[in-house]
Image 1 (cartoon, rainbow, N blue to C red):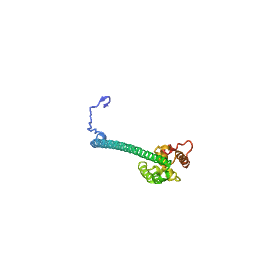
Image 2: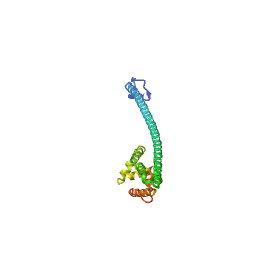
Image 3: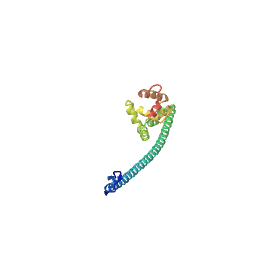
Image 4: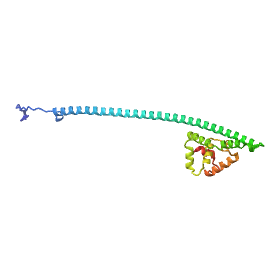
Length: 225
């Protein structure tokens, strides 16, 4: 300072200390350190949880892939089994059709023999032979055996057809079974021991009972059941 323009030689000293700001205090450093440790811990826990979650998602995805692979494998097995059953069913159907045609041929032979014998002068003396022929031609056991074999290869057809059309008679079902085997009228005639024309009449009556339109195909309708 100056007194009267002259600088004063008097001096007064004050000793003081400037302390650090509160945010640089030891307590705050401890808090900062603790917060840093907690942050690292939180990051570690979050990362660990994220890693476990990713592992869980990957495991679930793997399980789903295995389940889908197993399902696909089971589908393939079922498809192969169905294909095998279809082949076996077709084979049995062919065998049944073959045996049915064989029976038809036998009936044709018996009918031919009966007609030939009936033209003989001594036909009246051959009554026992005619009875034997007629007995074999009308033998219901043949149809029963055929029906058992048919139900083995196509067990639901006759049942389904009867449920859809309850008014069908056993003879109607018999004709439908022969048509199911794709047998022609001339092949069915000896099986039923009737003429070709009679088979056509039976087919017409069957169409009526099934309530088919003129444009509907009888055999196709039966095959689609």
